[in-house]
Length: 344
Image (cartoon, rainbow, N blue to C red; front, side, top):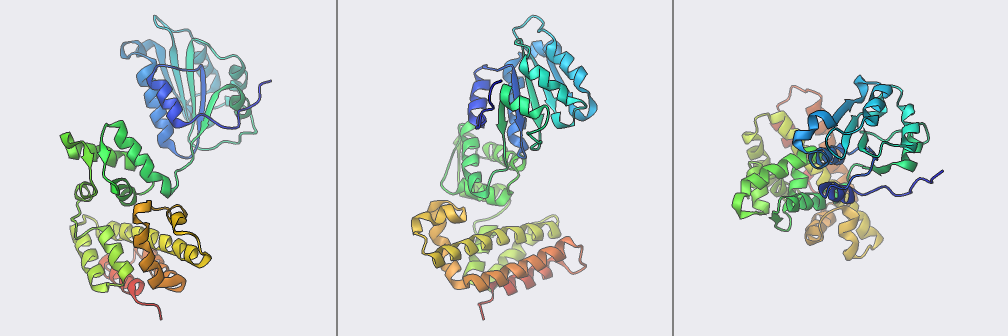
């Protein structure tokens, strides 16, 4: 019996092969980061079967609503008036009786391309997953770490033949958060926003999100890092004033500032351990060209000050999410005053 490959296929390799019309008979794709799986499904449908051939040669099966025998019957069919048919099984881990695919994995239909998609990591020791890892082209898509998001954003811009200014991708990643579907939607919006200019700047990211150069979350975090309470409160007040939902905006601001302080916390560890400056960016998860901006606030706060500031933001987050009656502006104001105060 063939041995399972230790390393799965990369997203880049799979997407390139799909775009060039190169398909294997069987794919097993799984993991927590659904964007990669959804994108590969989209590319497979786009490039494996011509639009006018899909009525007879494309089947999309929803695992929770189907059973394995019906799905296997679709996989075994021969294509009609084309060289291949495509079968996509979404939610394969919920397909009733999917262990039957163990036998199919050993002898897949050579005239079909079958995508078995799991939006989580199944127990790979059980049937049919162990057999699929041995016989199919497989890949595990894990949630990207924060430090990986800017590179992913830059890659998406390149897919649209759009370049980006240094710092634009990291700014977008911080503003939008780690969910790749939401982040991808923001990339689409920015590509439309810059139009024929075909270059995204950091100011474009801020303006598209409804922020100005003076009033934006990054100006707020810089004011917090300096301990400039007056500026921090003014910026926060401006951001809340423009928000349609003050409570949601306050929660988002608290989350961004908490992420900022967490980076400062990691940097204090680097400073205490004597980590070379060349390694700081990788340790705390920021682009190398901005890492120096984190040193002064990290030294100003110190570990105790950061711990206290994070505590103030955590209390605000719990209050905002707990449906407290206090106005979100007041909750945020009190949290910023406590977080920006100098260490005792």
